[in-house]
Image 1 (tube, rainbow, N blue to C red):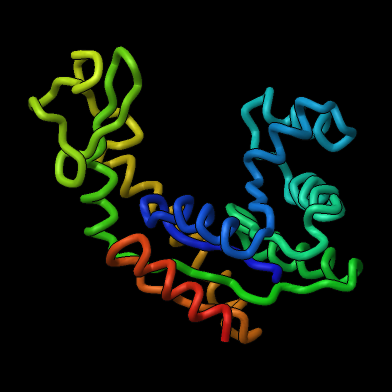
Image 2: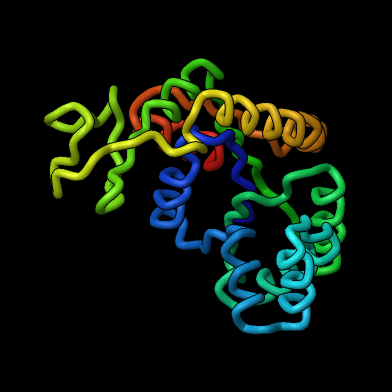
Length: 214
């Protein structure tokens, strides 16, 4: 089963990916992880990617696609894979299709976890991190026993810059701009499986399983 997993920041995509790995016994391929891996292993494409990363530039699509292609050729992907964080743009989706066609493979399902924007903002802006030990809390879903103080080490809790509302809104706008064309692209191909991301973790996973096991 070859899958793409889409979902905005805060939608619980990472948690669902782990549950999918356990159920379907296929690897999760995160472009961030494989980019870092290729750079560390000093593969030809990794060296090229590092050149852009060192300059603070975005790694071009052709390099990212090449690194994904190399990863898909590894034997643990023979029975399937979960692509997480790729494709991000329409050109990447088209390049992925071409790559998979060469490999005589295709995408079976594109799981799109949908969430209300206000709920996402509430989830993400509620996170607090301990300055001393790094443990994370949530002021609504997982609050500390004492407001502003870490249960484990007594350190101060603070809100990271990337958890502030203006940053979250900007991230969601970027995601929406990039992903809306992708959703339409895969809908036209009959591969899109949109899932309501509200509810308990297991409940959401059951919706995913039902959608892709038909």
